[in-house]
Figure (cartoon, rainbow, N blue to C red):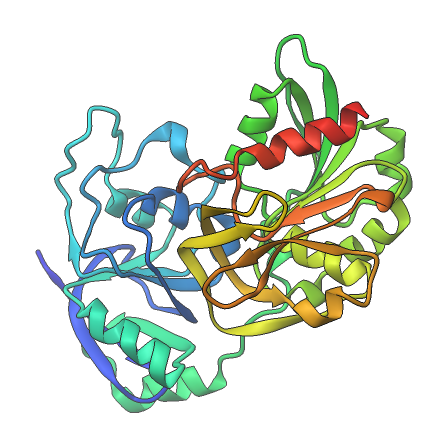
Length: 357
């Protein structure tokens, strides 16, 4: 039986559709993602915690959900908005439907929405909040809830592990500690494939505790929210820079910048999907997978020990920075390619080379 649902934007506009996933209300930040595939990785990416994501690709759910492709143990996305939802997947690997996974994790979805119009509204009117609710909910009540809602500032605390855990590989060469700000599991898989045992630790860990683990290198992971809300990791980087190789991804990129005295800012729309990035050293353009709302201020980087290594072709934002004397290196995008192209997989090799040296 079809469930009639609707979304209400903070400007008062409503879109009616059909519900799937959990039959509950959801009030979150509203963003859009232009990826043509990879919806499973998106809903399970901790960087999307507390966000309702509009998928601009028109058909979602057509290849189901596969056990091996999750980016976290528990999806924490706030909600999912699609044009057409397919509940009859065609994929020999699939084990559950998208709707079943959303329902298990109390995440509402809504289909039959004009996602082209909705995306234009997000771009042009900057509507940053959305309520997914029952079609019968009075508009006045919905708008009151939207007005009272503010984005949480403890998202990393929500998604970070509470105790350290391990991911080992046979005949390993290096021991890596990964600070979990919302780490994507494919980052860990890639490190294992490259001969690294990985110890994943909570974001509030102290520098002395990390040094006691005798790592060859340190990863500062991706994650959700404003980097300025994560002072424990900023201080951790300050205490450990130059003592061991540190590699940042996504939020980790922003935290390394802040630790070195650079600044970050909230972007108008963010980057979610595939974006072209120029590698300044090789002069090659790489197609990258991204998902973030904040960026590193390019001008502020020039006043620090950092050097910009990668630049976004579309808006000139800093996509990569490094300080070899302090053993720091980071990228804004997802080099582990889940989902996304594999143009940037080499950045892991650079981290391996730093540890070897």
